[in-house]
Length: 548
Image 1 (cartoon, rainbow, N blue to C red):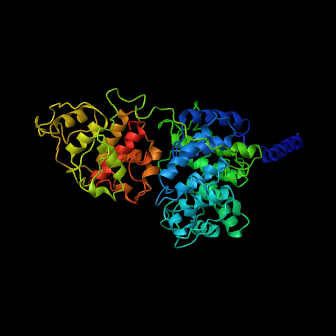
Image 2 (image 1 turned 180 degrees about the horizontal axis):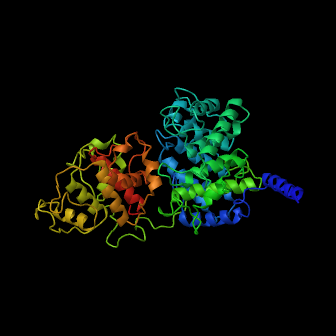
Image 3 (image 1 turned 30 degrees about the horizontal axis):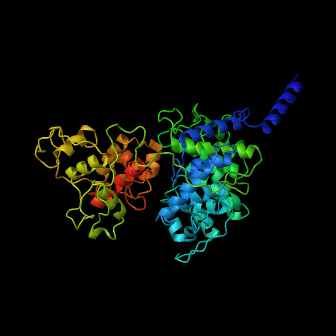
């Protein structure tokens, strides 16, 4: 009997060595991917250039094999070409991951990123100094983008330092931490490694495992991340809450490395990284940022969770990995499709919001010739939404008072001005009384107190962001930004910690929707906003709201 029991025990142990992790077994990845693909099509019916509701959604759908509606990819590509031509090929002055994200997606669509509306999007990645400026994300995504379609290294004649692939590889290796792995903002080699940035670094280095230094760093990172993985198979933040994105990036990394989610080092208490990611998936096919769902479905998380599942499905089926796109689909060059009638507003806008037509065409000002806000100023002036300080001067670099902002935003939304007599310091016969009253009645602006408005007080950038987001909601725009996305968006700006807590979501929303200039290094939340900046914010909001 003892011999029999010993044999059974030995056989059981041997069987365990060759049996996939329990959680992964029985998972129908194809069904899960299909469900999340349909969710993505519902959530992003018209993808456009952007880090949310744009490239990542398109990438996932293109690599999923799911049947998308005819013209879906072509409409995205057509709009992308229009946008890039309008931006004269400059996606961002500082964050070169903007180029990398678009390049990766174009590779997934079988499009050549070296000719998009006449612009070569690879060229910026030939500038080593500018690519690495924003931190480790720069070289990581430059490598992933360049390798996605095996592009030759672009030559950038304007670069102070011409980049090579090896320079980007070495940049990543030199940022390795003492414990192995990587962190986004490395202050010292003793910093703790982060699962999401380590996963991305491993994805970028996956194709260079023939280099001994890369292979050694990869093994150290895998050991580090295995040790940091908790008993539920995932990674917790500083508050002890598991988050989806960290697990997704390590999951994609294992698939890119050819290891897959069943690698024994990443199975804890029978839970794989895939099992962990699936705990965040909702019944609709989206994904929560936090496992308990307290933050609700998060679109940024949903897009990452979606392509994480696709990486697993491709690994399971023996296909090329997520970022190895020699098997990319092929699409046509159909122009952008926009079914909205121009200038009529969104279907869910407040009924009192009305578009403003052009009533004084050709208006301009002598002091805006070189202003980056010239087009916005002229568009608003043509609709009598904004005036100059006199007939010849707009004064784009002057500050704006609270009364002036209230007046402009009420005109921009086509609301009927009506005083409400709420504030003691707003005289009934003041030129701005009706505009302040209307802006307050519709919840766009509040007083400094219950009885004082401070009409001559200036407004800061963060105050303007809050007010503009309130106006955008009246226009029917979805301005909500999940907690995880707020931090992800704002941390790109060096002074993001100075943003007031009450303004963080609004500032993040304005950056996400490009109502604020995303190319600046600092957010400058407490700086008084300039007239030209206000014109730009409101103009961009009106364009998004289909009111212009």
